[in-house]
Image 1 (cartoon, rainbow, N blue to C red):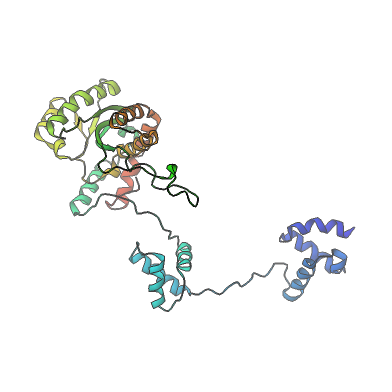
Image 2 (cartoon, rainbow, N blue to C red; image 1 turned 90 degrees about the horizontal axis):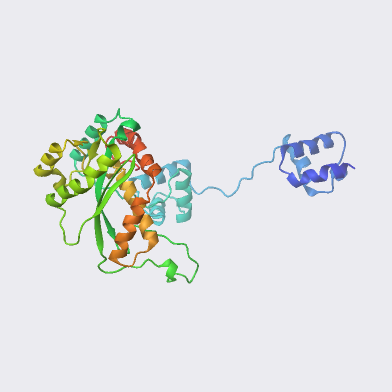
Amino acid sequence: MLEIIVLPLLTMVTCKETRAAIIALHKNGFTGKDIAPKSTIYRFIKNFKERGSILVKKASGRPRKSSKRQDRLLKRIQLRDRSATSAELAQEWQQAGVSASARTVRRRLLEDGLVSRRAAKKPLLSKKKNIRDRLIFCRKYSEWTAEDWGKVIFSDEAPFRLFGASGKRLVRRRKGERYHQSCVMPTVKHPDTIHVWGCFSSKGVGSLTILPKNTAMNKEWYQNTLQQQLLPTTQQQFGEEQCIFQHDGAPCHKAKVITKWLGDQNVEILGPWPGNSPDLNPIENLWSILKRRVDKQKPTNSDKLQEVIMKEWVAISQDLAQKLIVSMPSRIAEVLKKKGQHCKY
């Protein structure tokens, strides 16, 4: 009868309650054989007699090849050169007296939260002026709420390439599938590139226009784009309500004729916009989303590419646009926290 009671418990031999029950029976005069004919019972009783505890002694395992001090040294070496491979780190660590494999190096770094990832691509902030301008801009607008940013129309130009590199860079494949059609990214020597200008706000996407081939992005083209695309968008989305226009510091944007034209149209400008700051412009995230959607359609020629771009642009929801605009206070706060350096956006 006793065996019937205890045997179901043995399916969970690591349970504290199970071990306690076995020891209680043992103290009341029952032998291991009386409790259940299992070697596990005898191990529990022996452990209790030797150590006076029902807790299972933790196995020592294989001794570590490195001390805590040597682990800290490895961390310093890695932080000194973030791009060093685990094999290179193992060689340098060996010079410090630690003979360990690249795999051990990866495990030690993982314990410190250091994992290998692709480096993020961000514009180079090579000048102190870049950082200073970013801080000036963020301090100026640090008190703005999501509602304030909801009155801004963000704009930018972007290139779209046929068989572009904006799609997936990695594929999952089995052995022998390296050149399977679904695992290959097609490329051409001189892919067609289409340049577009677009704008959006919290009210949704605005106009999108495609720059004709062999047309330079100059002040004449830009003024025409603002006349034909921006003004209808502001009227459609804001009506008589006051809104603010954002554009970056590209030469054609800063031309005197453009500044005068915007003033004549009573268009208020956000800024001055800091250079090399795509992380502060939510339309950059919108371009990334649009490019992924376009790539999924796999357009095969320039006309099809233009058609897909326009189709996917108008399909972008207002909810998505609002989420991007709402992120602006967080972007501003993070740049200030990082003292002008790039943020995660």
